[in-house]
Length: 99
Figure 1 (cartoon, one colour):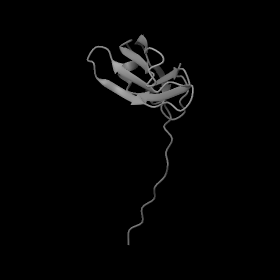
Figure 2 (cartoon, helix red, strand yellow):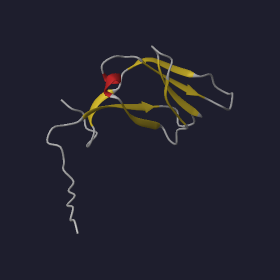
Figure 3 (cartoon, one colour):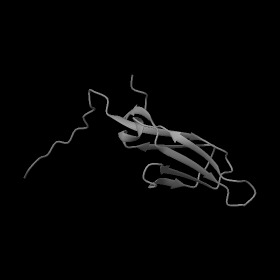
């Protein structure tokens, strides 16, 4: 019989990743994040509060190439767009800003 010991090892050095925190209208119907260079949809979500947070690849922390679009499906308000958005560099495990 083989015995395997599995341990959780915490990395000594921070593991950098991008974090995008969006403060928006709590009544928004949909939030879309788009790569403005390629037109690729990075993610789309139906928010459940006034803040949406997502972890993104590190490439989105070096340039402002994201476009954030807030939609209202009730057709009462126009869409709101924020252009040239950049993700923040954080540690993958703690989600704290690396300095």
